[in-house]
Image (tube, rainbow over all chains, first blue to last red; front, side, top):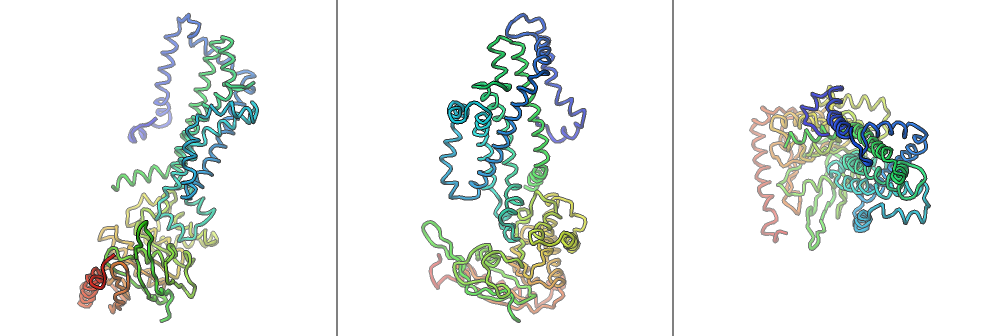
Length: 268
Length: 266
């Protein structure tokens, strides 16, 4: 949520939390009130959904379905970030490789990742390997392309400075290349996070015996409508939580960048 | 005086798509140990090209640069460079202290000694309290002081400065000029100072090398016989200062058209 700086400073701790939760709370109340008398089979009262939520998820499913999903998500996401940064640095720092790889990258990026699922199933079966591979294959691109762009855009005066002080190889990567590209890398990581969640769910819907996506589809097929809605709610909450965590990570890693940008705006 | 830094027949041509641009034609000069020499020339005289070749950041097309008897093929360990663009030469994700310490870490200086060097360097540029700040929290002049502190802490035998004060206001510039003289006298390093400002060159230097327009050659190697103690007001109102300034000024004017008549300009 973006707010103006003076608003941001005015909102501390509890006040800020209240600000953050006000709209969700209003929407939940609306949902509760509007569906309270509902007799529709497909749109049950929120009360019913919430009671189904407790029964459905605070049970064996937590370990059997939620945890495997989260682990796959984590493995796929970390894999995508590591691979994306590694290849992105390589492509960003070498003009020849960049020219060579660009058309291929544009093509690969344009392939919708879910389409890989049937193909990957042939090679890797329907186990965790397939699901993690799908997540990596889909969320790799924003990290890779943003990293490459960030690395390419390293200031040449800064690069000359680093060189003149003997910063080469691993030290250059750690002290110059990665921090300098970190704003773009983080942007790519944020995009990759939401893609990862989507692909986690989709890969589990295709062919699976566990996971959130699998469970939600099972509920839908069994006409367990309140349980299905509760699964969607859980996915939403998971995404929201991860986004909050990511926001904290971003604020920490890019603290310098915010100040630096403000200083630059002030000068020009 | 034996030369600490020798530039012999330095030549640099850039290959563009359809033509060759001759930036530096033939430069030969030596800078003695502990000397403060300034290089002036009209804009586009290849000053930055020259400095980058000396710093080992750019490979010359011909000739060579020799530092302490060893030919320069990459950035030498006993050399530090201060760039004009202070805002782009300090690492914005590091504090002032970390910026100064980084090259020392790279040089494998022991941790304790690093702390001493950082503190001394900050003290010597008058920023003893700014170590914990980020560079972008400081004014332009202070940022350039940090860049100078970083160079000084590195303990180089040669300090290269590429129009370091071109982007700061006049008041700050005068302060930084005096700081440069003071550090040079106190630490006994060799300083090669590139500038387009004739007054600055005369005020700072023991010698002023005047470059022609590109393709660059040296037009004159002038000795600045002003007293060693220099002071902004007194030195600048010295009649000898005015003479030297006028002399260098006319040389720079000639430099702009140095190659005209001799041959068509490229």
